[in-house]
Image (cartoon, rainbow, N blue to C red; front, side, top):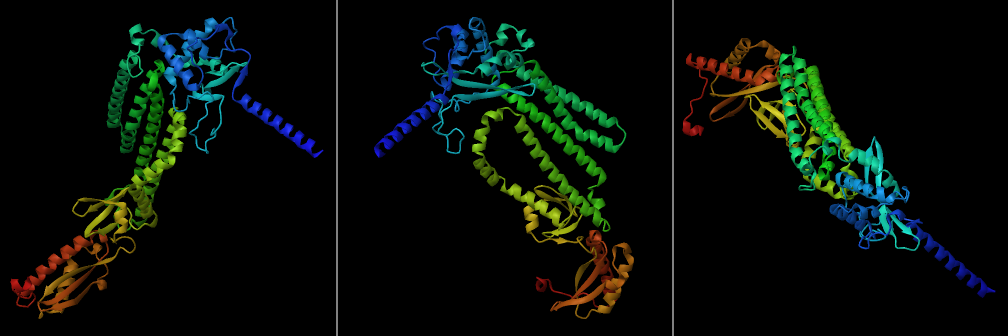
Length: 548
């Protein structure tokens, strides 16, 4: 009894294995009763054993002009057998035109194996270790509707399976040909212009491409001149700024439109047809983004003046903070717009449908390389955001950086623009600026003391010098001075050469404090010279050798 049960189990297991094997075998091919009966027997030399062989055969036969043989590469199941000899070659020729003009063949995906199994695919791949009976060659869009082009593995009875263009793809050939085939204008060109030249382009394309770009450039120049005249003739500075800001994006839009119109009239083939659509999408997107950035920039400048001479007033603390924050928002807006535009271009460019998987597969390595190369730029961007958030330096602030008395003019992505009192501009990387210690004279209380040190003789009367100091204070602009009781005169040092007297000048405005201290020093020295000429000892007589 036990032996009978074991035998039964073995028989059932064998049956299940056979059935599973049959199911797997059935999934590898599309079974069909017939395949292109109306065409007769295919040529003996025609190789349809693999996806690679089928595409190669289509290109070779098209080059020979043998579209009757190329018709055997199509599954004409939707066409009655009596009509296949008439329609098959025509459809094959139209399919070749579509493939030649609009399809980027990825030979790496067209494996030269009958079962289309990719032995090099990683375990993360969806088709790793699997045989395939259908391969997507490309996707074309007509009226915002996708039309895929498939290769199917078809088997008739017990004959060897063959790879042919799917019947659904063949049914869509006329519609695709009407959209992507030769235009009416192209058909009117002479025969020599429609012959192949080089780079897989026809002669009319080789001649027409430079003409197209030349017309786009001429249209751009005319548009730029027109906008320049419009900007010069309008009344109002703001309107002139808006026109000037929109000049570049409008020129880009016009040039892109010219290329788009011409490429719509003449359907380009080969690699040009792959590059022009993303180039047009890129042109429109960049034009729109530049327009938004420039116009928003001018509107912000109109609302908040970034003129440093206006922002350095001591009572404009709130405006300096606002200007710095607006500058941060502007930079973040530019980043968001650039990323948005990049995403739109990727979504619109059909070329990425072919290269998408390879791009994703190498994305990790690419991001590592880009991150390493752009680490300084990214560090500067983060530092500029840090400055704007912690308000350690604001646009219009008066700072002392590495001995230079400067005003902060701009805080950009990668550098801080400082204007020295001499008019010289310092361009300092943001990371270097935030890592260095600097003085900010306007960050909180604008009042500050400027120290004027003068060496005098041991016998100099300090009280007389104090009187001279306050007399000088009465002569300078009082709006730039602090309260009178905040000024001091102190002896802060002494050596063999005499006393060191420090005149503590309290300044109400840090922006004018340096110039004011220079003026007070000059007046003090003049008064002290007059005092010494009157007979009072003020300056110590020092031998030059001792001074050295």
